[in-house]
Amino acid sequence: MPTDIQAQTDSRPAVSVVIPMHNEQGAVADLLQGICTAASDLPAFEIIAVDDGSTDGTYDALRAFQQGCPQLRILQHKPAGGQSAAVHSGVQAARAEICCTLDGDGQNPPEELPKVWSPLLADDSGAIGLVAGQRLGRKDTVSKKLASRMANALRGWMLKDGTRDTGCGFKAFRTQAFLNLPYFNHMHRYLPALFKAYGWEVALVDVAHQQRLSGESKYTNFGRAMVGIWDLFGVVWLMRRAKSVSAKEASRS
Image (cartoon, rainbow, N blue to C red; front, top):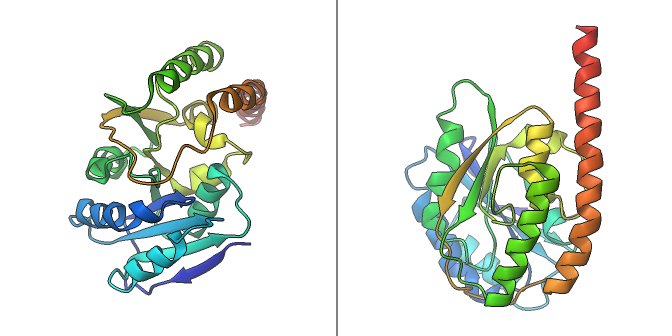
């Protein structure tokens, strides 16, 4: 179980910003300050940083920043559980009805956050479950961009999820709707398909991308491809199961 080190706040936040972090010491201060600035127009917010088994000074950097930021909460995984596990722990701990995620390495510019949470905050119908970012002008290597393009093409063909960039760290969603989804490793890459399968509308927004501030990629292109193939078949099965359950429920009503 993760350890939760919480700074007290007086009111329930409008948005909980969840950040999975693994060996991101150099990105902590700039990233968190950027989030605080982006969220300054909200009535209240919280930041949940999940230190996923870091072996550098990420935890100490988070604790240092927390001294001047009462909105920051810190969770720790020992050992590392991976990005989906870190996101899931953060969302489980969130106090807001809307959660927003971004990567901990600084490649997702925090000033873009309002683009992602605004559609949900403005959705009076309650129909939108997820807002997914799609990166423009990606600052990755040519090989990584080509591998991502091929993977997105295959995923789009199999899942029909309607997004060109499901790997973007920028996501905003209804907290309980996310927690109602079946949890599995790497699920963060398939949220548009999963939310649609479980009856939610998905909105897409274009977001900027920038050079990494700290750390290094946690996946090789080959490793990502091999894991992704198995994940795709699993997600297809989950989508068919979700539609079958919905049909049964409709027939009983």
